[in-house]
Image (cartoon, one colour):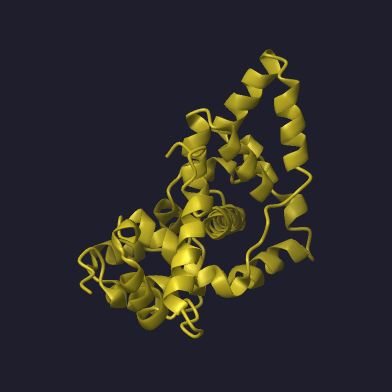
Length: 263
């Protein structure tokens, strides 16, 4: 099988990089949430990350890197690289980074870093749960899709501060849309259903291959070769692993490429 849009080795690197970011999630978020020194209580105003959900995932990564790019060379160097191998090497070379002072002190940058980090982590979680980033869900909300809005609120209650969600809430208030507010209230009392952690890598790669237009072009045999044999993100054992994987992909498409999403 020839993967003309993206080489298998690069797909493996993407998977590894995404999973490496995911692996730091608990450690870093716990550091902030423990809040032993009252860090959160001393947060500046404004403080939040809802507007960052209107940004594509790649922008969030650049913003996060900008907080540790003290001389402006890190991002410049990353953007100059042509291969994922070169990008990966640069990430591996980063050791004990220092935060940038954007004019309001390094302590302020810690809050900025936290906001970007949370936005990035929740967006990756959205890929796991819904098969699309929160940026994509906000695009749907902007087009008037309430299902996308309620799904996003379940994932992060603070997303109600996003301008697209605020617009919909304001309209509902003026129209006295009690049904909308009842559904919104129910979403703030729940969280989305979690999937099995062992399938996170597969869900990531299904989302990635869908975004680049590759998933729809794969036959059952090609999907088995890519996800089971090459990437090893799905158990290739059993009496019919190719058929089992194909059924999973079908369910994933049904759950994530839904007609009630507009993009």
